[in-house]
Length: 480
Image (cartoon, rainbow, N blue to C red):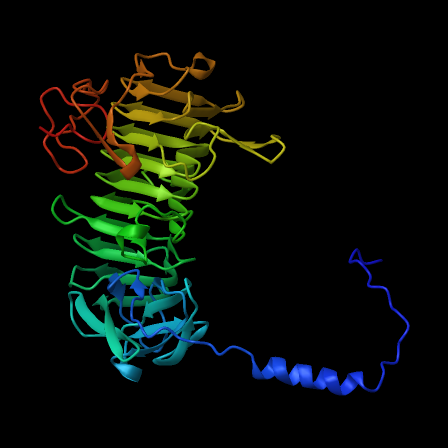
């Protein structure tokens, strides 16, 4: 293959007169001796992007491991002068520092003669790797990065909250276990499993953090026992504000075939790929899972997935997932009362509805592989999002398909005229702040004071607030 680069013609070699050669040598020496020196500014006018590098809560180091290391913070330092400067940088605590610094691709505690060109910048990368502190509450860890320019010093403070944790790495429980709120969070590294016949209780106030590629597999029974004042939190292992809206930080909770009598109450489950997945109807017809007063939010694929499962949910929020707030696949039995299903996150370019039910299983070509009976009952709930149609339905007449929705607020064009009972369509629920995932409503909402009684009255809302005599639709009762 010929190169597209232009070719320089090769000229025949010519002999220069002997008198020219010494002249060329003198000229070269003259140019070398006249090469300008580099002059460095004697000023100290460097502009620092920040005077404090702050890390929100960071877990202390797992024994025998380098896990976890914090997110990376960046400091930029700009030289506004017309001449370069040289700077020295030192970590005040030296080798004992719990912070890690990298400049120009080199890591260390002392950096000498770092040159910053005129009108240019240097970037400093900072991480923290905190040692255990034997405390139940976060403890602040401090250090400073000292910059010395022309004999003058400037400190950039480094600060982090270090939080000790209970670590579980690739753990299988084959007997009953209880996690209690002892002031330390529980951190799952890798997988965690619960075998059939064993029960796990997660008591009120417990905080669980799962690392990347971690999942919780339940073959036995899981009871999450949050309360109004002490909710249980299960989320990704970066306990900082910046990451609270990011999906796919961990796998999620997966209830396996044979798992029954599971309950999740007053819990916040966030940042997973699939928040909660439930496989298969129990043999004796009882519920696989009962959810109440629970939020499942910011999930990459689905908040709640049932595969031929039996799920009952009351006062729950399923919101901001890449594809589905709820998907009932290959039939199953589902009952929702006073729930909110919403999707405004823009995690993916979604074209289909985010509330999906089907009594089929199809391959990628749409060919029917299997079918099972479906029964989905929903009352006093809200299904809304930015698409014109937020209900995604697929059915075959080879198995029963019961889609019983009554007294709900829905974003829908009533696909296939399948909504036979009274519902409110396409009227604004007036959520408080969809950008921040706040799906409470106001008094102008189409769901305000529109709930009815189906079975036993629901006396409170997701937050435990007592409902009015004429309650609101969805999981939240409007605040006074």
